[in-house]
Image (cartoon, rainbow, N blue to C red):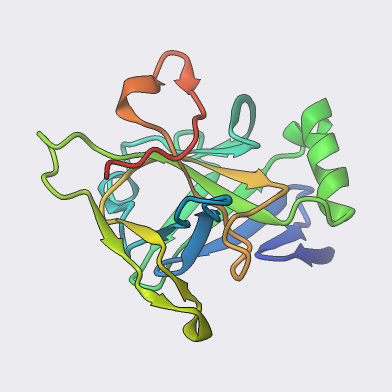
Amino acid sequence: MLWGGHSGGLELRKRASGGLALRGRFPYGNRAVLSDGGRTGRPRKEVIAPRAFAYRVDNPDEDIHFLVGHSYDRPLASRKAGTLDLQDSDEALTFEARITPEMQEVSYVRDFLTSFNAGLIVGLSPGFRIPPKRAVQEAERIEDEGSDPENGEHNAIIRTVLQALLYEMSVVTRPAYDGTQIEARNWSAETFDPSAGLVRTLSRWRV
């Protein structure tokens, strides 16, 4: 290792071979505020349960990509290419993405590295969708938070993601999980098209 730097939940290391290793950690069980409810609505929060992504993470034949900003046109690494490693536990999903010297010559990769070193890339965002009920009866749970402002409870609607299909991890500029520098987004089954990549939508709730 010749030099190192870090930003938020991401850590970048350069190897003697010239390749770069980007490491990150997505801790489970943290609440993210997806919406404050506006003037009249209720806040909405989301929690990713431990090992919620296990179905695809535990199967080495399932390809998972590492992208810039959820764009399949801007890949950095992938498990199928042998440049992305994932390790799952009850506490967190951790990863190492290896950016080869050849990829570092690509213009969008150079742009990402410049933004990262400038402190503008500050978090991670897993791209996933909820499986249909015919496959998993209870993939998510919706409940009321309660109201206790002194303890941070504001009568929010809380969605806990129990099982989800993880397709990609992305570096992002604005994470929703402020405490952990992590952002979560959801793609619904209706908009998922493997031939066209994931179509990014707002988080969809089934209340």
